[in-house]
Amino acid sequence: MKLSIYLAGKIDQTDWRHSLVPDLRNHPINGGPLHTKNFIYKGPFFISCDHGCFHGPNKHGARDGCSEGALTQPEIINRSLSAILRSDLVFAYITENDCYGTISEITWGVCLRKPVVIAFAPGVNARDFWFIEGQVLRAHQNVTLQELPDLLINEITKIKTTLMLGGAGSFGNYFLR
Image (cartoon, rainbow, N blue to C red):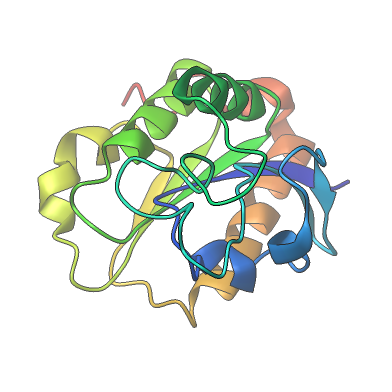
């Protein structure tokens, strides 16, 4: 059984998701889910523009680019929220403190009672995120890009085991401690 996963976090020209999702760089923004060896990637999808014009503040890898295919902000929001709805796990990698969209993605996952796991990059003060961290299944601090693939696989394994042992309702109230 492969879990479907939404990878929440800031989008960058040299995005961290490329190390977790083979072929994401060449996957069309409208191409739909991407099957990997260990999971099904549900989003977000963005344009891997080597010029960098689709990347930067408020662009989400899909706005104001130098070619066809740019999305509107409402389209980006709808696609992201729909992908989280259709995912089994929301895994967030927080690389900077000003990740307002990522906090929204995490909150949406929590509201939908999805298992949500956060990994904080080195240099990010996780104490600033105490409120959201208190609502998620697990949070990991000082996670490097090199550690990220193993951490994700470990989390997938834990969640699959929990689902096999307790069924889909296992995560229903995990954040109500």
